[in-house]
Length: 196
Image 1 (cartoon, rainbow, N blue to C red):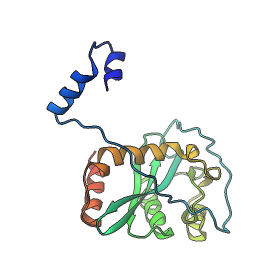
Image 2 (cartoon, rainbow, N blue to C red):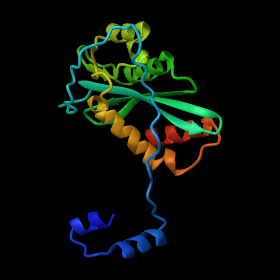
Image 3 (cartoon, one colour):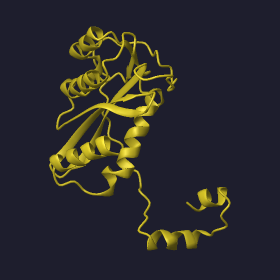
Image 4 (cartoon, rainbow, N blue to C red):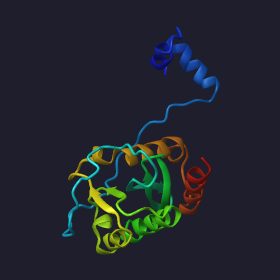
């Protein structure tokens, strides 16, 4: 924080910044241990990387990205699947579940399709997880005319836009409190995505 303030021209010292942060209830949010959510050890077909780390789009419904992350609650894990439109970086489809199965990813995709009705040729990019490579998910993509794209093996940078969204929601919402129930976390995620 001190370095950021110095870069914009404010002459401050570390101790003063710390004191002001404490007085105003501002605290640092530390990152947490990573949980692997991608099961790429499967026999499904893998699509080429059409996106090729070009996270820009001239208009809506040209490029969509999707992924799955997780939230710890006292009831156990809650998994969150999202679809983002790269033009606006908005969440256009999402779903939660206590299990990380293809149904979770399919529900998020169906929400995005219902909301946006994308044109044929819209690039749909995800990692190589079994949920995204499953026959049911791929069938839904074909039926809606998507151009399917997948990240390289084990390369999180190929899907950096959605990884950045997950980092943001975790820092701004998830890691700021402990969640008693999955339902409590789900409602907070709903408010964050739809209200913020």
